[in-house]
Length: 420
Image 1 (cartoon, rainbow, N blue to C red):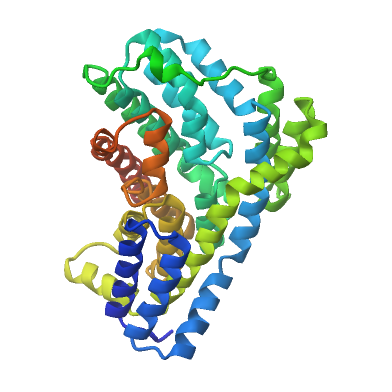
Image 2: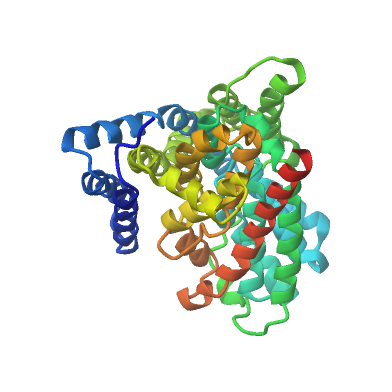
């Protein structure tokens, strides 16, 4: 398809969106305005620009529907106490001597079963702070363990970013999740190593004051807590195992309903689903805004110019996959938005260059975890706030987080090269 907008226009639109997001304006509006300006500056008339924006937003609707229904599972895991129970069980089994490992694994599993990464960190934080205070850990090591574990779990989860990437490349959600298992494990290992390294620092220790407000509540048993996520995994696994397709649109809410029922909270089903909806409304609206600018970028000459640049530098075409994930996530400070823009924009180019769809999806997805926690995004502030960390100290963790994301990205690329 011939480009309707110039590369310069697309980049200017993206830059304007980033600047406005940094200034704390609602991200969805920033992306929509950036798309409009980018289209007009890029040489498209008002009608063409608006039509392209609407088309781009429309391409997100299947992902948005699945994300909306995933809120039922997320709400159930959080409100029934299942997420906290799973985390506590892991920490109890591994003990204080392996506190960093326990915290990282707990966050990874909570995120991997379908809880959003920021919510995963917030869920595990009270438990992590308590065990960190007993073990004499500092906030930086505990927070990095949670963030790194969350990043590892995020690339093998039925979360919004995975759904968006699988939709863009028209691949089964389960396949995209499974493709990054090895990168996720390696990211977890690097997380544990880096977080353990940070434990040697004596600044910003966890004190009894940090534990205030960590209210205990009646939690379900481990089996009822894990049963809902297991149902989701089993339903999604029917396609690769037996050729029976159960769409995430069905599997995710079914798992949530099962979780509510088996934990004895049937009378709260409506309340918990409404809570879950409140947690996914934001990301759903963000995706619609992301779709508008993704439409402009996709219809611009950017993908061709980037491809030509890689060729001029004698770099292989597949490098475009992880690179686009890294750059777009950095621009939006969001794994979901970054992975979505990169996948929507560069999928045709990557497929045209002969990169298998599943491998491209995995590399983009992993790449989107490298610089997704920059300060102009909500994840940076939500995670720092979960342990009461100052912005200046939270900033110091970004290089470590980037190294964790880079580990999974390199691993995904190496797996592609080995597997062909």
